[in-house]
Amino acid sequence: MTVKFLTTLETTAKVEKIIREAKKELILITPFIKLSNLFFQRLKDANYRGVRIKLVYGKKELDSEEYDNLDQLNNLELYFCESLHAKCYFNEEQMVITSLNLYDYSIKNNREMGVYIKKSENEKLFNDALSEADSIFQSSIIERIIDEKNTDTEEQVLDKGTGFCIRYHEILAFNPDIPLCDSCYKVWVEFGDPDYPENYCHACGVKAKTSYRKPLCWECYKNLK
Image 1: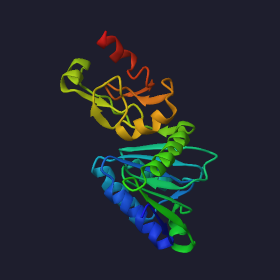
Image 2: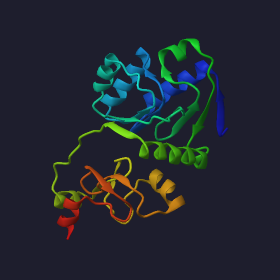
Image 3: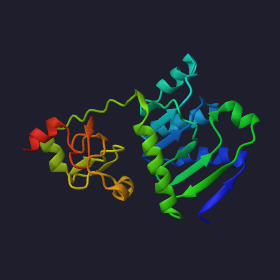
Image 4: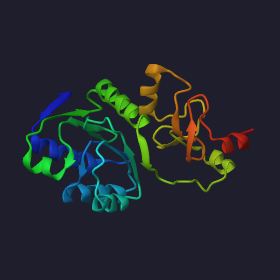
């Protein structure tokens, strides 16, 4: 089965499963944020495991309590997209596209629908949705970004052979010729734009304006010369 239809309760359960089973990365796209206690606890658990969480929302209605809750997630990147109406939640292997917001009222009171996609069963569909999600983040305003400066020198990074995906910061083998993780590369190669703006330095992992053609920040580029 490549795609499974979900009812309200099934959608809620699958979103919880996606958060609970995330290993490295968790993407949450939702106009409204008012997390239920269950979802917030699952996000805290994912944060504790070191999962990178990227959340984009579209309605300027976050109260101070919600901001305080989100501020507890030190691995959270927060974005705002005013035109956002899509709802999509995924980790490395599973995705739900749905009408359900991350809103406690929606979970308890609304009739929602969704579809569940596993990357291993429908990789093209998964990557198509991933590509659109990436476009949403690229057009969003960054409200909170993780400050994750790498303390290693460039020489140490090269010695260890460690690099970073220039799009989502996933750790991978250092290779400036292919500075994207497998999933991001499969999305990028469909368009093949070497100057498409990316987010991180491939060598040190700091937030930087990079691209497939120029995957290193200026400091790392100078150290390599």
